[in-house]
Amino acid sequence: MAVERTLSIIKPDATRRNLTGQINARLEEAGLGIVAQRRIRLSLDQARQFYAVHQSRAFFNDLCEFMVSGPVVVQVLEGEDAIAANREVMGATNPANAAEGTIRQAFGESIEANSVHGSDSAENAATEIGFFFAECDIVG
Ligand code: ADP
Ligand code: MG
Image (cartoon, rainbow, N blue to C red; front, side, top):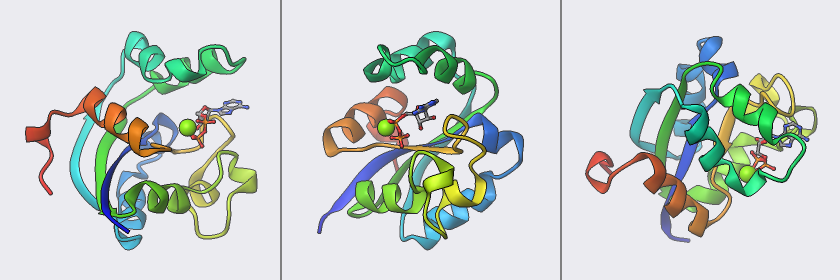
């Protein structure tokens, strides 16, 4: 076990329903510290760049349109095994398959509008954190 940082995004479906506080409470209850946080509106270019790994997927254009449809909250989470711990509290990509007690099970609307993003590896976490935050923005 090691202290890690991971990038989390509270997606537009969740900000629209005023769920930022409830999602943050679940992250903190899971032992994840919110060490940087900013509410922003993504540009379409930013969304396409952030999700570039999915650009050949059928859902790519819809996903990018969804991510710019309202404000998002970008945040850095820190804690023991933060990358895996966040993926666990997020739940499966499709809320219909997400385990009881997970954020996506509680709040997700659909496989696309699934309330939260979380980095899936140490390498991607570093890249994704750098996409939104400078080191001086992160206060552990
Ligand atoms: P995760 O967010 O669980 O890591 P992926 O990286 O596979 O999932 O996909 C990124 C995002 O793309 C998902 O969170 C979801 O918003 C959207 N997405 C994934 N699969 C689909 C799909 N089959 N149809 C529509 N949107 C999808
Ligand atoms: Mg992913």
